[in-house]
Figure 1 (tube, rainbow, N blue to C red):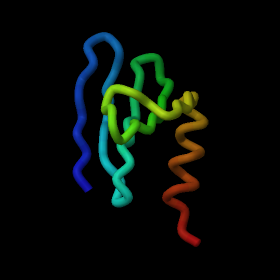
Figure 2 (figure 1 turned 180 degrees about the horizontal axis):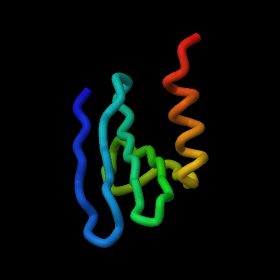
Figure 3 (figure 1 turned 45 degrees about the horizontal axis):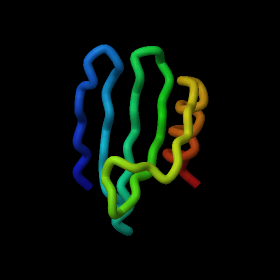
Figure 4 (figure 1 turned 30 degrees about the vertical axis):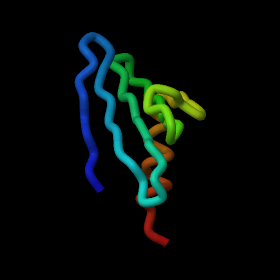
Length: 70
């Protein structure tokens, strides 16, 4: 999976990728320590279906869950 990263001057970094099912996903790591997770509409790259805003601690919890071995 290719992940593209773009610096947003004064705001942070956004990481973008497309899932195997074709969903566009963006993760914005803001300078204030918060994270926003977006999914893009297939027909309009600049329109998002939903957004989830997480604190740094919440993002760490999600990362731990995703990387936990079962």
